[in-house]
Amino acid sequence: MARTTLKKFIENFNVKSFSRWTGEEFPNLKQLSPKEKYDSLSKLYIKEVLSVKNDHIYYAINHVKIQRCGKNYFKRSTVAHSIFIDQKKVVNKRNNILSRDSELVLDFLKLCNRNYFYDTEDCGKWYISNSPSILKSILVGTIYNQETLYTAIGKRILHVNINWKYIKSWLMSNRSICLTDLNYYTKNIYDSLNVFNSSTNYKQCLLQDLLVCAIQLDEIVDFTWSDKRIREEHKRQIEQIAQLEIEDKENLPIFKEFKTPDNIKLLNTEKEVFLEATNMHHCLYNCYFNKIKDKEYIAFHMYSPEDCTFSFRRTPKGIKLDQIYLKYDRPVREETRAIAIKFMNDYNEQLDKLLKNSYKNDDMPYFFDDIF
Image (cartoon, rainbow, N blue to C red; front, side, top):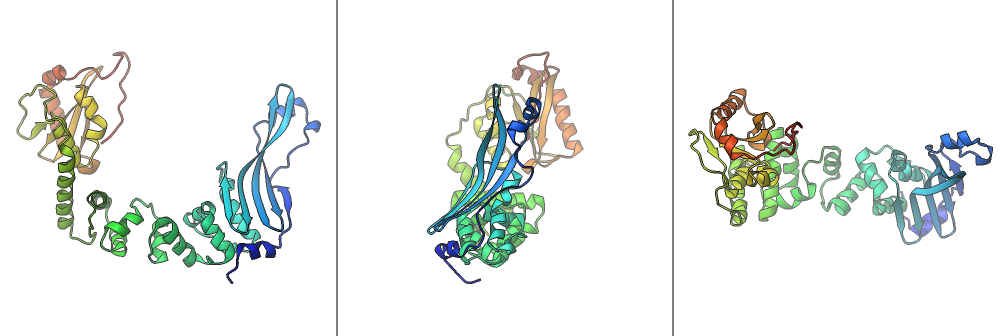
């Protein structure tokens, strides 16, 4: 397609102005009975409008409804989504997000004989429909196929200059890791994407944490490192970040200490709870420290048979094991859970004395579905 300008695009636009209902036409209110008017209050009528002038083009979807004030019924129309094009700019304005409206830009491109974008994957359609810059480039001919579309999305919106196929593949995936961060904080963005996409869920979580820590420490990491190297580097990162934050944490005991088995440790200070959450990659500190500080929640670390965090709370029926997880919220084995339950039963009296009520009414059940 030859490159053009918005001025020439408007001059050469050969579709005449129109106004038409896309579905059921709006009724003549004078011909409806009071019951029919009342029953129509919930209906939505959609009108498609195109206005072509010498110096601009306006295309819109209007939502039209019947409204009532006392005995008076009247028509109320609002612009749900519109495109305005003049010789200098493209304005894409969305006032109401409905499934039909997401196709407005693509419908307009059909009118402009840019049909080759209508079958674009949903990820590409979203950027076409929501970025005036992308839409303008399609109209003037600088974006004219899949390659130029995804290259533009990468450069203008994601701020990465990589092969368009990688951008498309990333947009079509779950996008659980930031492409821009991979570009700035990993050694090679192509290698990083290949490693991440081929990794297990557990390793993906580890790589995400490695990247987040790299951002905080302003360093470059390499996803092609061996698993051992990745774990070592991540451990170093955690220690560095924790050292920066831990100075602000209290080291005063919260609960009265009591002797526990050798494989179990009470997390009894703000520092201990913070380090546990940091090392185990869960939200014990962020989500539960206030409850621990108020003695409504108590947490422990178990060293064997598995390295895990477990916690208790008081319920109307007594002390209950609330949560028990390995690193990254992975479930423990049944034998590990059984040890935590045995600990709860063996130390029930001590736990009962330490924990306050965390519910307001003993007759009401206490629901607690949060996880680390």
